[in-house]
Amino acid sequence: MPQSHPNIILIMCDQMRWDAAGFAGSSIVQTPHLDQLAQSGVCFENAYCASPVCSPARASWLTGLYPHAHLQLKNYGPSLVGRWGSHLPPDSVTIGDVLKSAGYRCGMVGPWHLGNDHLPQHGFDDFWCTYRYLGKDYPDPLFDSFDRAGVPNLYLKDAEGMTQYGNTLEFGVITDPRQQRTTWTIDRSLEFIQQLHDDPFFLFVSIKDPHPRILVPPELVELYPEDQIPLPASFRDPLDGKPAFQERAKFRIPPTVTDDQFRRVIAYYYALVTHIDAQVGRLLRALETQGMAQNTIVAFISDHGEMFGDHGFTEKCLMYEASVRVPCLLSWSGTLPAGTRIRTPLGGVDLMPTLLELAGEEPPSPIDGRSVASAILAGREPNPQPVFAEVSSNEAIYRGAQDPEQLAAHVMVYDGRWKYIRNRFDIDELYDLETDADEMRNLAARPEHGERVDLMRRQIAEMVCHTGPGPYDWCLSDGNGTAATQ
Image (cartoon, rainbow, N blue to C red; front, side, top):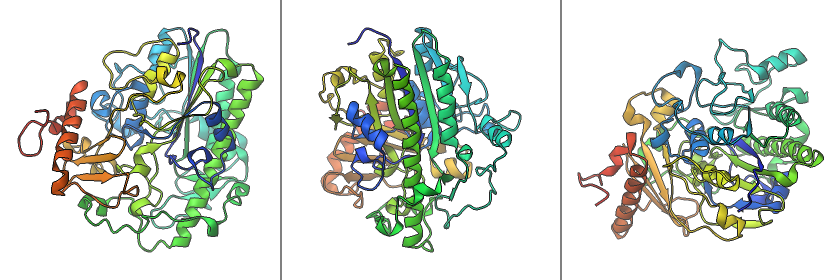
């Protein structure tokens, strides 16, 4: 294990699909800088968020804990200050806390989204430049930059020139690069790097894109001819045999949206991913120019995925692959073996302890995550183990339900082939991803899979007990009043 304290840059997008990149096998999406990052380091081909919704997922990536343990169970907003389940408790220990104590200079740029977003916290007091979730009592640095530049703020609710088909992702074009939030985020990140001294640094670059609203330079849209974009195989999934709540989920695409309209949505989304790639390229070039590349770990992930038409949905919050699977790259030039591809599933709680071990630090104990640093330094697969995800109900996420039961409604376990989803208020789901990669056939009720379902229920029960079941104590029963851990 390397002994030095490397710099660390954690780049986290919001709502980027795992397969929307060249390094993930896409023949359509152009991501040359991310592709080079993958070639220079490690690509986790099967990385999964700990929750398919922003705030809980982010809290897990930063703490190494599943939501039932860190208790950020739904998205934070300024109107939810102090409300249980809607913010990361102050006593939670993040990677920022650990590295700050180890002598790192810690910076945070972009949406924090974990509570009191105007307030420097969790070790990031050397550079705190957040926007979006600050509340009306605090100035928003991003929006203020539009005013100073004299350019229209296209992220306002009623901005002109936007297009939306039904409830699909809203999109438009920018006419001035100063109107784009990822560009602004990378600008601020470069400011942090230019202010550095001799201490090692940790920079959390939180990129709100490609979460809608999708705003891109028009020339990038031209890279994606709509007539050459395929629709998802499950775009018109009738949801036969699936839980009934999915049929009334908020972001079910209405039948009035045509195939051609949705192809246009896809084109803009892909164009925005290409824009993100170009901006990440600016950051990587700065590291090279300033001689930091050899001693800087660069991690690139998304907080969660994007349904993007799969099974007839956009957005997230479901346990389908498009929603829970994410891109994940880790590069450390000259130290991590270049071009390594890891197929063993990586959990949304595993990156934090992995980065800490690479930095020569230890995470707090206990946490849910495990470090895979030794394995990837050796260029080998980590020992396989199941990964999990948890999420609130659609009623809590989108319709304001505050009942504690609604904040802990779904839990998933995936073992590398089989995925089981336990739904608190509906039928369960079981998918064989080896024979049914599109997750069209729910096998949970088939008698021949009864033992498998029992086993995976026990795995869930053991997981939630590791750091305390909290609001997921309902998973300790098998549904018939028998303890699932027996």
